[in-house]
Length: 70
Image 1 (cartoon, one colour):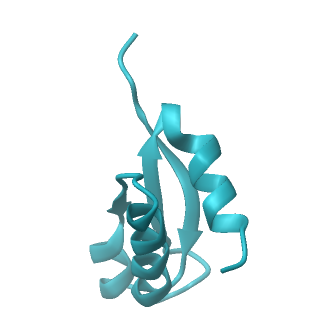
Image 2 (image 1 turned 135 degrees about the vertical axis):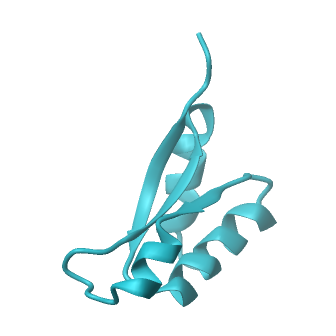
């Protein structure tokens, strides 16, 4: 079965999204941001989100990292 991307967090601004992405990458987890262009064109937090996605096999580790305090 092919691995797939899974959303592990949603953000309303690109600064927070990129900081979270950097935390994951610092811990060896590759990730992608989806919807960043839409969020910048329609900056309405209630309807636009930037999604941080990782491969399904890394979801648990990514969530643990994002939920931990530095």
